[in-house]
Length: 458
Image: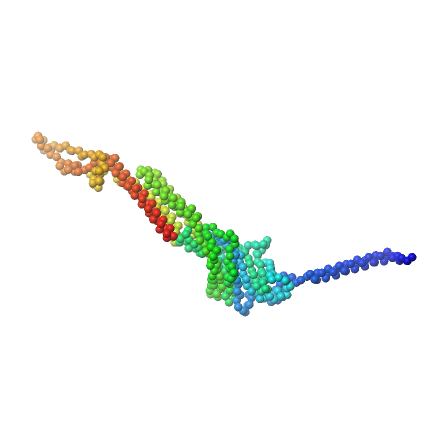
């Protein structure tokens, strides 16, 4: 029978501790070896180290002693408008993209084991890399918008082939747009966006539009009151100042104004007001309160409409097309009121009762000379002048059969024509109504001719 050795308790404790220590050492060694295999140089840590240790200076442009840096620009329009005539500006939301070459980046990235063609960096590296000093020359206000970030601005640097830099950010801009409003509201406007270098002259920096899709529009981009053309005019606007020439590029948007709003709100209502003012020509001549009330109401309404139409426009010194239209409507409405004044004057002038004539026209009841030739065909009743009985001369008293008469007075009374008050009133109404008949034809005809010339010219 084999002999079995019995270990003491102390020996058992030592054996257990040896196994525990051995297992711990094996696990630590295996963990270190796996970490060493999985660890690779971090591009972000390497970027910081290279920027700190090498001579890369973000304040200096690439190729300091060489040719100027060429920056290609492109714009994606995400929103356009509104366009304000009063302040002569417009709002626009864009994605602005810029690309340029920076050979210094190649030295930075050579030490980075990063198996991809692009390296996306966050906005924390914006100040670590050189970027163009672009600004908008016709800018009134601008705001950076956050894009896929909670705080900060959205900047993205992408390095293709390790030397090309790509900068993209979203902007909300209010840009100045000088407008010519001579033919407003049948006008078309050209609004531009200017991208200019702030500190670098053309010896250091040149802006140019990208060859492929320099300006593109997002889906559903439109603006109220205008039709935005998809064709954009590109050009250069390089400017010379006292201390150098600075590169500048521009994109011009074509805006064609829609006439629907102005036809409904301005032209058709004002045209109807002019037609309503002509209703006074069909009212009774004696209906003075109705005709005066209609004329004053239409004048005030047209004036209010003209004020509201110009409320959203700048105070310019030249005459606009809408001013010509509203001014003509005011003239037609005011002329209709003046026509009633002429009718009323004719009624008062020719409607004075014969019993009120005296003085230069002779005795009471005498018809004026200018009426004598034309009254006989219409006069229904004419009073014959009464014969005056011969007056007896005081010198012939006591001599029967001898009388003396005033022959001059009898001759004047024989040539005078007397008419009644009704005859005078009838003649005055005929004259007043004749003015209304003529106005019913002249006013619409002149207004029609004005419309033809207006719409042909403008």
